[in-house]
Amino acid sequence: MKYSLTKLKKIHINEFYVIGILAETTYSNEKCGADISNLWMKFLMGNMQNNIPNKLGDKLYCAYRNFRNNYSDFDVIVGCQVSSLSEIPEGMVGITVPAMKYQEYFLVGALPDCLIPTWRTFNKNREGRAFNTEFEVYEKDHPDNFDEVKIQIYVSML
Image (tube, rainbow, N blue to C red; front, side, top):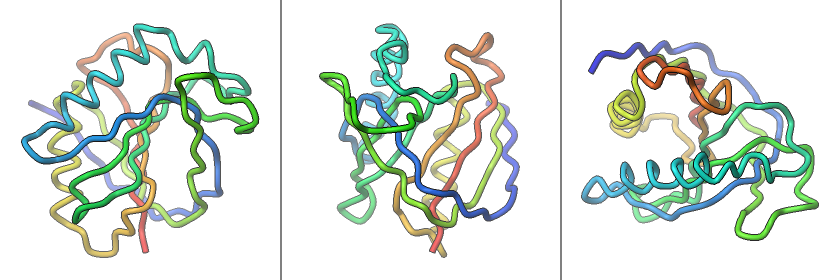
């Protein structure tokens, strides 16, 4: 499993909104891998991005939030950035990603194989991490090649 992770810089990101679908999951028994894959399949196969109002661009977001139980349980949302949470389609949720400092990373690799070791690395090194909303940004709706996907990752920092 070959992938490349580049640590970029710490940046401040202003508050923004995401509408999408949500699942609760856990790191226990590696359940999160299956839960997140199933959530992505439901979102992409259902063309749910086409039903999101007030969408800002074609980028897809995967947000992790509401960490609990010593950070092993959390919510994951797959969706799109929007200008407003005034219209949330039935079966979807709207979240506010808070304004704060984030450590930015750039990841290139095969999905989903490159994400699991990347997040394991982040979870082992918790120093300075806020465990607030954290997120990934995917450049377009459907990558042409799942063997080399480019992902921006933002880890919340204290």
